[in-house]
Image 1 (cartoon, helix red, strand yellow):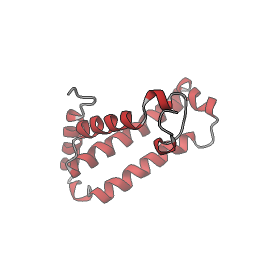
Image 2 (image 1 turned 180 degrees about the horizontal axis):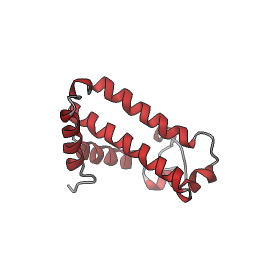
Image 3 (image 1 turned 60 degrees about the horizontal axis):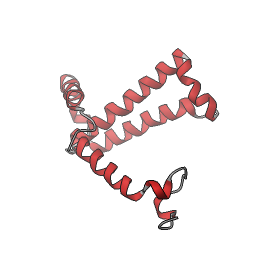
Image 4 (image 1 turned 90 degrees about the vertical axis):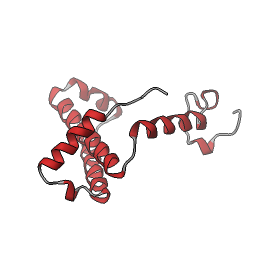
Length: 124
């Protein structure tokens, strides 16, 4: 099974960052989930009042694009830190979830449609 992601170095750097500052005491799963949610909210805020077209055009505005990159990085770092604290191997979790999602959403049934898998009729 090939790796879809390899976050080992990032995980090590984030652990070292927390240890150096004696912040592991604050990195409970509860606190990390709340921090993750905060960062997702900050990312959401960037897109909140944009049209669909404007949301694609963010990449053409260097300042806005930098802001998006920073918030995405915050989301990823919080997610990786949370997975470490909980002992979740994100590579395995991603592989397993992708496999189950592929099974739930067969191409022949869902291509071009935006419904939840429970709303599809078999062979429709």
